[in-house]
Image 1 (tube, rainbow, N blue to C red):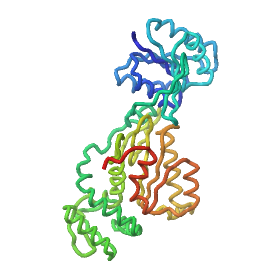
Image 2 (cartoon, rainbow, N blue to C red; image 1 turned 180 degrees about the vertical axis):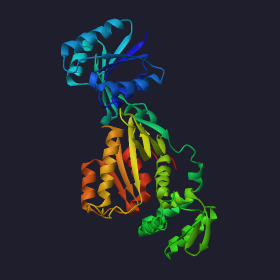
Image 3 (spheres, rainbow, N blue to C red; image 1 turned 90 degrees about the vertical axis):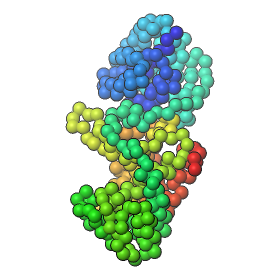
Image 4 (cartoon, rainbow, N blue to C red; image 1 turned 60 degrees about the horizontal axis):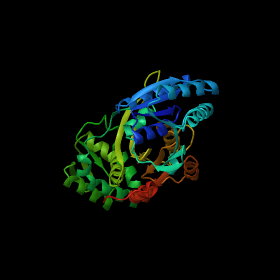
Length: 379
């Protein structure tokens, strides 16, 4: 007997995608209102890519009779199939109307409790079903209207230079001001510099050790105790801050049960010009997506225009971008090499449900992620 899953389309597509992937129906019927056509189209695209047939049916958002009629019609059209209703999405009228129809017909009805990592079966009998599916990062973003164009696919170079990355992390934890000196040693945007390019750094023991390690790894030439010849843009970008994204990526990759992507670039699906965005590090576990924004700049520096600390801009940017890409069920994380001292930023991060790790605590990042996501360390 074919299985048919009925879903109510809303701004939050993840509960629908969760049950579709977990139960793998032959057909998915999407009940949607006219104002949710774009959301329906995105969800339908991802479902079809899994070779699952779809059947889209428009309902009126605030007409209970219409919803019941359309729901009854689905039961008739698929009378020889095993029908399941996911009532997690839609308008309240859509939920009530479809529930009444399918409950009266004795069909199975589910509700996705993402915060509890479970699917609740509420009819005809009740039971709790653990969520046992991982939504791929690409699919998660796609249903929210973001298409990935590129990300780091070959990470061999990241593992090859992870010793240097570790040296930089420990240097930052002990003397975070040195990170600023490394950043500012590149007087222009690394894209505009002529290579090889020589940088001059403070006379600190940690700097000398860092340059020795860089030279031993073939990442440039040490021209003096505290000066270094950077061979190309890749090494310059790494030293200017990308090392920290790699550090976060390596920490996440060492944990079991995650999909982890680095330096995701893509476009939003809009009716106007398609705006571009970039995500530093993303991890997927179960039906949740975790976005980590990585910063090496000084978050305590004041903005020239409004005298607000740059750290506040970090929060606004992360909250806006995260809400759009993650929906209600994702999690946002701000990781900063430099300790952000502004009490407003710290308190505001809590109110905005943004997890944070600052300064020396970056050395504990792996254990912090493991504890928050309840996963095991693979190392």
